Amino acid sequence: MELSVSVGFGCFVVVGLIYAVVLGMSVKRIGKESAESSVVKSFVEYLVKRSRKLLFRVLREGGELPKHIAFIMDGNRRWARNHGEPDTSGHPRGSDRLLDALRWCHEAGISTVTVYAFSIENFERPK
Image 1 (cartoon, helix red, strand yellow):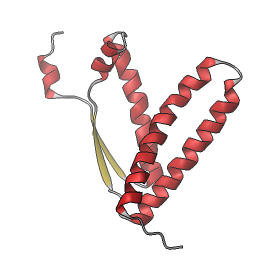
Image 2 (cartoon, one colour; image 1 turned 180 degrees about the vertical axis):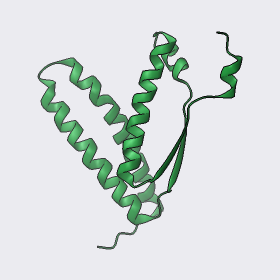
Image 3 (cartoon, rainbow, N blue to C red; image 1 turned 90 degrees about the vertical axis):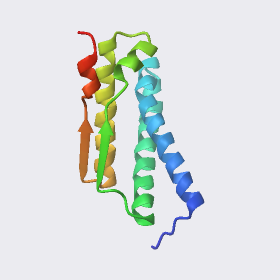
Image 4 (cartoon, rainbow, N blue to C red; image 1 turned 120 degrees about the horizontal axis):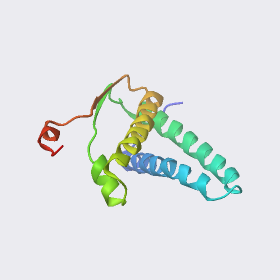
């Protein structure tokens, strides 16, 4: 089956992927609310996984995905402060999101990922 992707549909796919990512990050919160939510959580996890697979397939068939992606880890302390948590609590959250992103890169067929986890500006921070 040949699949052509127009610019409008491509934008729809990108928006859908962003929605799936955000929804996937919300799944962990659903499970904390109540025992009855386990069915909802399972269903949402299934939908997110299937949506991601479909979106990656559409992107692969509609054009060439990059072979190499780089991530710059930044803002973990700022995120923690904005959420009223200790500065160090942002790092585990950031690493969780990085692991999610690495899984998605693997699912999408992206073969090389570079992670920059330290900025030279950190040398200037007070100890």
